[in-house]
Amino acid sequence: GRYDIYSRKIPSFMINHQVRILSPFKLKLFDLGSEIFNLFFLKRFIKFLVPDYEDPDNLSGRLSHDLRLIKRNSLSYVGVLSDFRKIPMKKDIDLLISLSGPEPQRGILEKLLLQQARDMDGRIVFTLGRVGESIIKTDGNIEIHGIVDRSKREELLNRAKLVVSRSGYSTIMDLAVTGSKALLIPTPGQPEQEYLARYHMERGNFYSMKQDDLLLARDVERARMYRGIRRRCDVGKSVERVIEEITENVDRFG
Image (cartoon, rainbow, N blue to C red; front, side, top):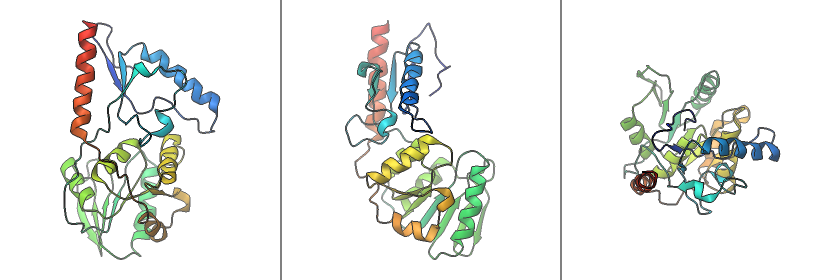
């Protein structure tokens, strides 16, 4: 969500999974301060629409649950939102390695994973996340894409037996919708990703490993033992919920 995109003349809504911003130093006072920060900006919006479930089987954990200051009626948990669908397809890709995020960490991880993947068997597909580079090349059992469009990414996710990726919340939602197993590697220095990787590992959903400690062959085998997110995530129902929330609150505004 963008805090600066709103209007005083018409009802505005914020879609945001991070109602609480976690401190990199695990300071509870900072976490409380982030709620105060969001309380200030809530005044600009009719509601925060949280792309998660309210029940204990949720995806975002403390990022948007167990809040101390923000009132429950200021939030609507609408369910997972994703561009993708779960499609029955043959699982013929042993490992899909999907890179994303800002430099230099994206490039550092690319180099590390390409080097280690060359020593592994099975069909491996890389999507490098390089904007403007759609080239495809092969290196032994490895197929490399510079970047893929939405349709191709949906196909690859559904064909992959295991996904290796960062642990951003959008990625977590995509993995939940497609029912994919995954090895998560949080971007160093990003508390949100580090928390989400740890949260889902503790819940038995995904295995995670720090970038500096990564041994791909070892960690892939460990990741296969985790179940993925098993709950059914109906994006269509989530979209309907968003429309209902907006319609109801706009009518009240008028």
